[in-house]
Length: 279
Image (cartoon, rainbow, N blue to C red; front, side):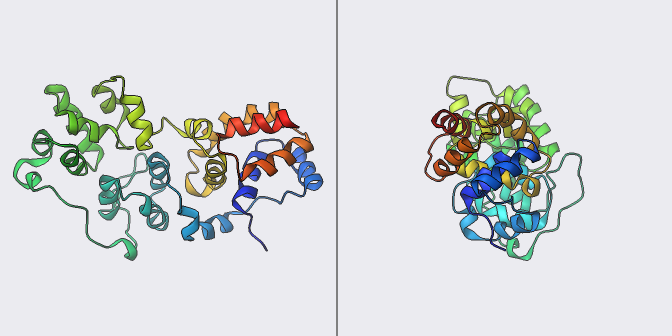
């Protein structure tokens, strides 16, 4: 059976946000295929072209929350700029809420860890962060923060005496930085821009509503039940009212959406509203 293209998968995700009876009618009149199943999603994960585009680091973190060795292997190619997350995966650190048991590491990931700062051995975690004098050193030092206990230690140390700016910056753009710790680093004018540029998201709703191009976002969300089942509903709930208002059961609007999907450069809301307006 042929697997759906990226555009078909993206349209299929939006169709899943209307009732099944309407979705079936739209498919029968527009020729849109049925959605891929879980096995097809898993096969898609193993293909390099699926991950040939950048994935926001927060999305990578949501995938790591499954604590699934196979998914960890698939997503680690997106962690080259996140040595802390990569180190944690190699050490078997769990990311799922409440989990404490070590996560097995697949053989393909049993390579060397990212660089360990020399000052870490001499000064410990907090001392290493306090010795930071550049952004590069900040990212290297921040990569040693691995566990929930490490983050508590960092937050307490910063509250007692603020860490250097470069260290705070490197810690704040870690997608796994707890909100309470990040809030302690302040909220200066460039803060929000820094986080977005680093791919740090408030949640799946922000990803669904504000990232582009729409086809990449929606294709990833279509794999949500496999990639981040705990999180995908937030994205669905964010997009559902727009889909129902601008597309609903209008076959012509869905046909326009399918034609626009592959080449549309805007966000998913912009795509949905454009298709509805054209139709």
